[in-house]
Amino acid sequence: MIKRLLIANRGEIALRCIRACKELGIRSIAVYSEADIDSLHVQLADEAICIGPPPSSQSYLKIDRIISAAEIADADAIHPGYGFLAENAHFAEVCGQCNIKFVGPSPEAIRLMGDKNMARQQALKAGVPVTPGSDGIVENEAEAIKIARKIGFPVIIKAVAGGGGRGMRIAHNEVTLVKGFHSARTEADKAFGNSAVYIEKFVQNPHHIEFQLIADSLGNVVHLGERDCSVQRRNQKIIEECPSPIMTPKLREKMGEASIALAKAVHYENAGTIEYLVDNDGNFYFMEMNTRIQVEHPITEEVYGVDLVKQQLQIASGAPLSHHVLHGVPRHHSIECRINAEDPDNNFMPCPGTIELYYAPGGRGVRIDSHAYAGYPIPSNYDSMIAKLIVHASTREQAIARMSRALGEYMITGIKTTIPFQQEIMRHMDFVAGKYDTGFVDKLLTERGPKK
View (tube, rainbow, N blue to C red):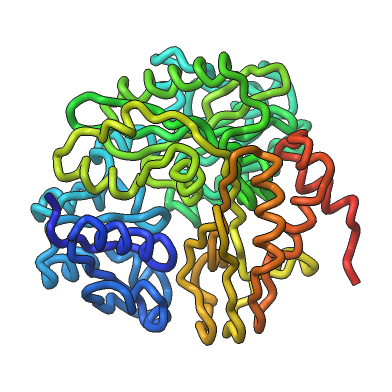
């Protein structure tokens, strides 16, 4: 069993890992930048080591500093969380070279599935449906035009190494295709150091559905159902729920079998997520695989009664999947709201600053994953998410009512947050009816108009 775990991340996911460590009797080591000295994960870890100045490029993304911290702390494993180095194959390799267990899949699996073009080819080989598109990397605008004419507009240009909506452009004609091709390459090069892109047919306003996978080193691979992540703005998720209101038992079985087949084809180990686009006719298409724990993993935990982070640590220690995971069945309905320090009335402008009053909701079926507290200064250097509000209930209707109640109790002053906007969504007739897709938020913003 892992005895000393270094958590190569910050904020709520670092705190999530610390809590799992405490319950498993593992000593936790936090790393932090100078901007995060007041973060709750630093205060609650058994040990904490500063790894550099505020910019992530000089701290959380510095492999040498994280490895040095692990060696100083005598850590025998590293959990990467999500973001930063979580899907960096080289980082996983360096961990292995230093005899430190990387809590995640093999470097080979990360590299294979992290390249979206290679992942697409693997999906095809495993018999998983993919949208029509280029056979590989598109080298120039002439080739892009040729492919778009063949598959038909609209198309989407995607960065091979992309993530978080960066390096993506939608084109409805040849003029916007040429412009989008070059701007996507430029953005991808700046964000990922890789300007390569490929092209797919763009599915208009689909549902964004992802399947949670977990696999041990003994060949056991299972899925723990789906999450609906369609409530998003500019490819950034705002609300997620499990199970999806569009799912049928037959479609779940087909998508689950496809997900397991792909994971087995790449010899996947540990937690991972396969994301799909699903149209209104129930056709699904592989989008990408995230070779890490997801931000929205708590709703799967609440529905299936599992602890995915504990499972990650146990798998990394060589243990098989727990019986209740191997035979997991959904028991509840769960919804998660990502509470961001943003102003929804000002184009979702980030609002770093000091939290004055912080009161978290409670009661039955309410969970808060957060590193925030009264007096906490939110750094401007990182993602604006400060909390995840998760609820579960026996039915979807009850879960929506519980989330509405919890959002109404959540008090955060001194900064702007997305809470009022999420309250609007909980009351919207289309969301309540489960009739929403990836175009829902844009529609809602158009309906509400500019706020004075």
